[in-house]
Image 1 (cartoon, rainbow, N blue to C red):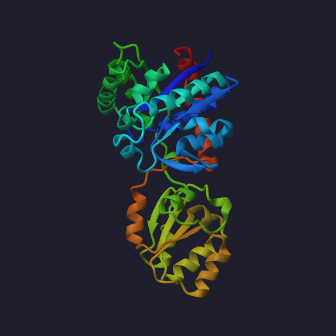
Image 2 (image 1 turned 120 degrees about the vertical axis):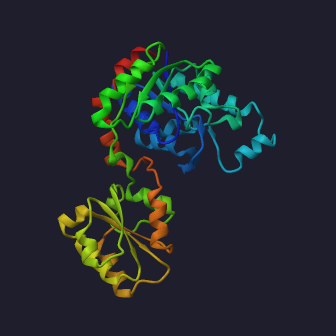
Length: 363
């Protein structure tokens, strides 16, 4: 018989996909066949000719589940899907049927199945299949992921619990993620006290980590929808800082922080040439992850040649430096299958902080 768990969240950016990734890693240590499904897919990409939710595609790529990829994202919400559903062009029963069909097939193939929800509990309501209804349909115990804190966590959990209870879904776990390290034990103590009268296990995941929160160079390129030039082996490098190259070249270089993505205007020949040259010096290469060369004005031919010959990762964009800076500062990083550095780190931390046996024993 296949064991199942539904991974929900109190909202966006709680780290739900990171938890799913971690549980896949931990479950595979104990079970021979571990499957994954994200029934509702609000953010879709093309993966080996399939339109899939990006998280489902990431899991398929990381854990070599391509054989089941066609089942792992049964209801992708592509542009126009919600309008077609509301206009009656998609049968009201279709989401329920296609999700149930995929669940049943994956249950037969696996010993343990991870079902990842989309966003907060209500996501998917537009097609009649929110997280609570899917958890109930799958008859899967729910693990609800929340960000760190105390009062805000309790408020968010109670709000989501109401919808799960209405759907008669079984919430058995609350997993607190992105904890402040020095407040970890105190926060968990109060949260366990707050939910002590329920039959819900309050457990914990990761402390807040800038490494996990910050984007890779490839993520930046994907966000800007532009190619990443330079050494392709550095595309998974994590950008811990984003800096505008607005002052003198010497001052910019002197004030570089660890693994900085430097935004520089295309007319700053001296700074671009200096950054390109420093790419070959180990101490500076550690500080300078790559460049975004902004503005519609062309670079001089010699500067362009030096930049390309250096191999430093760079993205060329016609927007202004300030606009690019603002876009990137608002970006929340997602994990992709190419992010080996992050994935390896997640799996190693998961082994330390996530008590999989305690979760598994209550399923």
